Image (cartoon, rainbow, N blue to C red; front, side, top):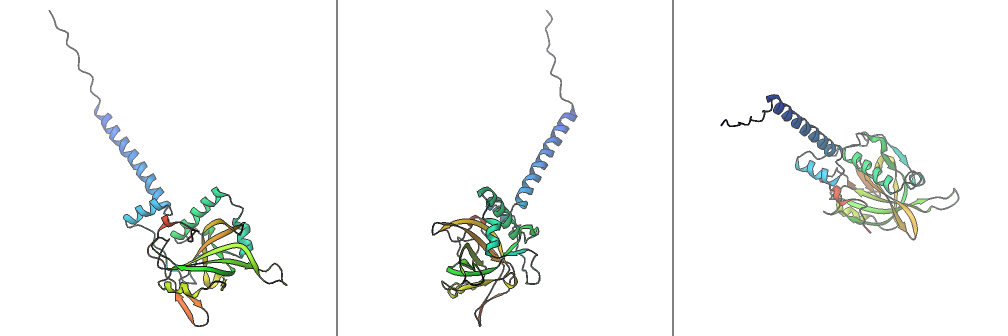
Length: 246
């Protein structure tokens, strides 16, 4: 009796495997390109910064002199308040991401570059440590003083700053005493805004700006003293802002 022999299943043509391999390679290339774009394009994210650091590609801050700083707008306390205070939490998060990215990339896109100006009364100061955005350095918390009119003495205004100095001379923190007045100007201070937040001070909502000088000159202390400002070598985006956590 004749036996029924099943035919073997048809084999796939050779070009099927070639197409499959190329499709997988293309998908891998697109995913790799997208991931690299996200990592290198967003160094302000702590995870991305750590990856770049492991790869030896973390951003290096440029040593700007006073004559080389990028062009940016400068605002006094009232203008700063009008510029930033109306932002909601979602808008602040977006702005802060862009501000920090600009700082880390040496303001390659200086669209949001803002320098502060005005008189600020010192509240407190301290040295920076290993849990801060960078160290060595110092940070000063101060409140803006604004004259209501030409015939009135300057009064506290609801704008605070954290003035963060990258300096190896962190003992300079002791030179800033409560009630001292900081006179901040675009030139020579070049204190750029890197973070914006809101705080409550004496039951009043206030604006808090974290600023870092980007012109690496000497900061003058009185008539005879000074300390040097240098680009920080190690940054820790995961530390976050504000620097004073209270």
